[in-house]
Length: 277
Length: 278
Image (cartoon, rainbow over all chains, first blue to last red; front, side, top):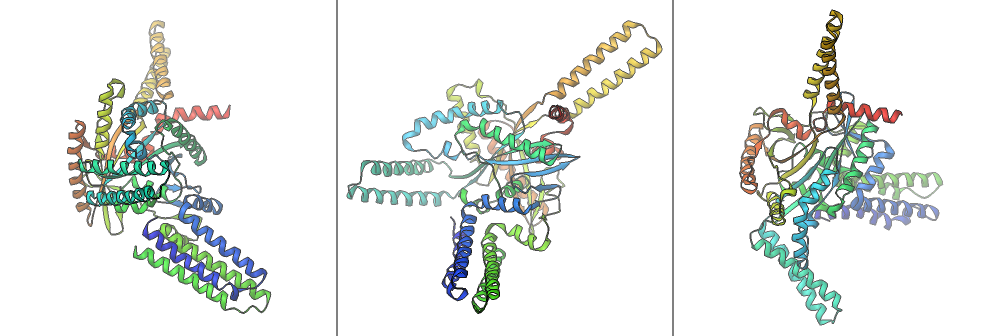
């Protein structure tokens, strides 16, 4: 959670803290219980908006039947999972799936370096095999932005120092072997990343996602075809061992806008996807 | 950020006003009790809106302004083509954002590679994303080959052959000549059937990069500069000659109807409908 989210959460929860403290002056008995339930519901909605707005927001738009027009000729449907365009009576539905290969190629522990190479070497073949099984249009996007080398290095060194402190504390308190090994593994992983940066590798922030478009003679036919294409992509690319989740809600709108202009700075991109930082 | 923060403050202030109003009404009868709960509910709604403004400012304002279930966030086109014909432009507040697409002609297959070559290729692709410090998007796109003109050509040929066959029959031409035209006609019809029945797919790899400017030409010049840097980086990393996508070819990479050309898939759609009906 970034600073801005924390600020929003604190300010909003302030309302509920004050409301809880004045329940007595608002009502007594059954009314007070009802007010307490309402306030607790309000807190639950705020917390859900903070951590799972992609669930809550599509439910809200589906129930209310709200659709959006992000720009001329385009429409975002009420379930918030497709951007629809009508051309000459035909409907094109476009959807997005997250597909961060980050864990696949980079976030590996030192002990797995050998398998890291094996997996990287197998990647082109896996990719081609996946492509062969797909018979509809799709795009695999990798959005990458260079990060400040010094800042990333300082951050990694800070994390390593913290883990080293944890390790010395664990050893002093005679912690079990599993805990010690786990901390040592984390230190090796951080050291490996520091070494890679020292060797001249540029630290990158990346965002990877898949876009697919389906065609239909009606809006429903197009969205149904899109849903089956999304399922087919999830199956075809499952070999990559990545999280393939369909994008819903505000991130769908953001990714739609990326088709016409990609962010010009990392900060701009990160502002859209706080979970990706 | 400031406008967003202002919305948060305004909504929270409204929420607090309703909370204060609910607290200040005396608890004398049931009607006032109901009024208190309603005021509190409105306060809670505004507090939720205040928090939602963190990400949904772009929706909350039109929601209040339009009072409709179909919210128009923008009625303008998402982009327009620059006068240089090689970039698309988009307005963001007071700034212009120019975007170019760099085609990466990559024609290699892992089936022709040894284990070491595969590793090197994967490393090259990995390096591709770090050739510049500017944010850049690399895309691999699988799309339906546009056979519209070829299909049209086949349809024209069939129509010509049908006319010729009718003409020969009317003129009472020798049977051999009619049979020859008839055979050719059957061949072209079969070819059209085959071409439109199966979708052919193409794979393209491209990079997308954007730059901002206060004027259109400023944004376009800035994005050209970035594109040149990226193109030389791609050339050096992969040993290919990347090029800027120009004119209508840009549409192939951004508009869904160019991913799936209409007449190319029309036969497929008809077939699907027939299957559904059956």
